[in-house]
Image (tube, rainbow, N blue to C red; front, side, top):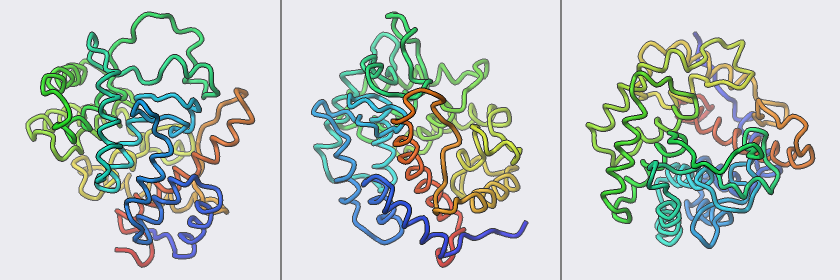
Length: 310
């Protein structure tokens, strides 16, 4: 298969879309990745989503519009920090870690993904909690596995006993008997990428995930326009430990992404809120379009699929 390349003209169209319709965070991330802007500009934009309790909210995850902090939005904040190789803003990080330590459920050793208060604000249907009882949530890898990685990143701020307990729970949930869901898988992949993770632990996670990938990754290009786990969401760098045997699927996915860039230069959500909060969904849709466009460009850049960028 001939390698597809995103042209400079197409990249410029994406830049214009992000600058005109993206949030300040996506604008800063784009200019950091493609124009050599400082990481501090990304951190400054990220701070707009942080609350006094140290956690993040304010629609950082565009499907959840509550201002209140959540483990979900806080995990996304750490994803952004990782994408710029960390930050020297110790207050931002220590505040976020403090929030996570305070909200850890020490009975189940996990983080409830969103607060019950989010029901009072516009949200996607899958975040609706109107039928949820007051019973504590059961353990979930999403977002706990991912957050564990950030605890390892900043382990000087975290009691060793907490890292140990959460690690045990994560590995227990990764037993071959448990079929892993796509969002759980993505959280485990982010944990695997933690540079400070003990190699023995990383290898156990890799082995557990390798057994699950065939049934989780959608390899049929005709289904990619729907909501599914595409190859590039798992194999997002050429050096991925899961590349073997997936080369053709990855190449096809790269070509697909380049071919599906919209007229405005954006890549768009493949989902909607249906008839829930239609006015707010329009803003969430625009926010998501900026996020997805930046993330798609970053993947294309890593694979050398942008003209003039090796």
